[in-house]
Image (cartoon, rainbow, N blue to C red; front, side):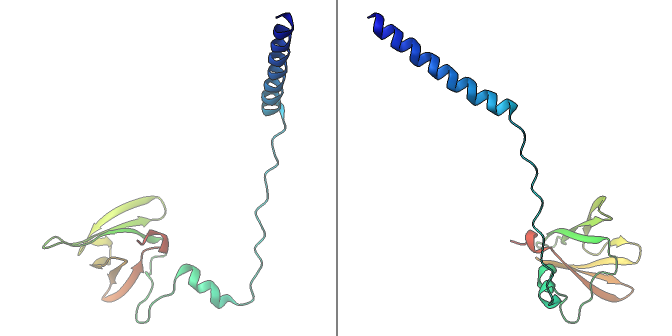
Length: 135
């Protein structure tokens, strides 16, 4: 009986030592150094980079306002016109109803599932959704 109690006390003490070592190492161990991002090799052929950001379709121009970005669309249904969610200057998001002006001289002409058509002084411009936003 006395031998069984001694054996149980020894096992409990060993388990306590393992737990204390585990938590001590977790709290006191040095933090791993941050890993540097992998260097990207410069490609000699820039034509393949065009697919990363999309290519302009023939007959359309990119939106003249470089700070304007399309973030979402709500399609038209029945008699209700569509809406577009646009990001201006990376600070402000606005919802624009089809037919309204986005900014002076720039009107939202059409809303489609993956792009919108803007009209600036009679010239039409296409602005597409980013690839990650499409479903």
